[in-house]
Length: 312
Ligand SMILES: Nc1ncnc2c1ncn2[C@@H]1O[C@H](COP(=O)(O)OP(=O)(O)OP(=O)(O)O)[C@@H](O)[C@H]1O
Ligand SMILES: [Mg+2]
Image (cartoon, rainbow, N blue to C red; front, side):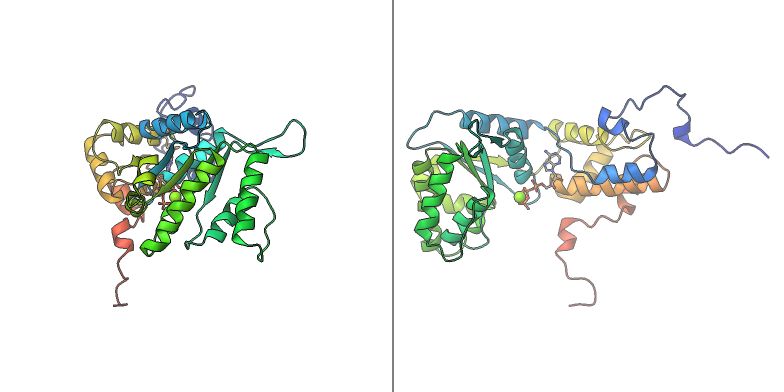
């Protein structure tokens, strides 16, 4: 009986160490398939140019001297396109530490999520929670406000980051005007930059107050379009997909197909490529092509919004 035909990925002589992959991906290549599939599920950071520019801008804001009207930012983008990832990355680059006197934690950058409804009390609560401060349901709004100011000074807060800001800027004009005033006075009282992230409704709400619109400079994270930056993003993804053969994702046909399936959202690309890579591993094809993309079980965002057959 003749020996089994070698699979394509058995062909490189030993000593060839996956030149198309990053060091991180190479580290799992000799492990079992399950390890490579688990590796696909771990979130990874890709420093694409606009994200790096945004981080640099936030860095300069953090180093800005204290002023009564600190410069602020609004990171703007469609859903699933990397706003939270940039903010969490920035927070992780400025970790908390023990204060020298051991009496408190130093928090250079505090990340909080706006409450789902425009409630001032819950807004302060979400900030206090991230400071690990005890909150009491019976506390008044002004008590919580004072607690935020006092603790911000105690922990040496340098920047306040509020994600999902559109939640508190939704609703009627009176409500969102109240929140614009809260943001304005909070940044003045704390004398630190506030960086918000949200969808375009947040931008429109901010523009209704010229002072806020002026102070919160928008930093857009637009959907991806065909071009050098997108192709370079695909090349970066390819380097962290632990497949034995190169897929050449940045070649035109695949790149166009991926862009169409994901509507140019980075989060959708992560999901699609992880599913496709898993199929490439389990099917032993070891590379992603158009057929693998189509068969990976990825449901494009638009289709997810449609009612399943038989329910209308
Ligand atoms: N720089 C990046 N490198 C690698 N993956 C990223 C990056 N940015 C975003 N992602 C991926 O995209 C997914 C969506 O990103 P993120 O949660 O930041 O989007 P978002 O704009 O905050 O969405 P939403 O408006 O729904 O809150 C993340 O879970 C992550 O997997
Ligand atoms: Mg988000």
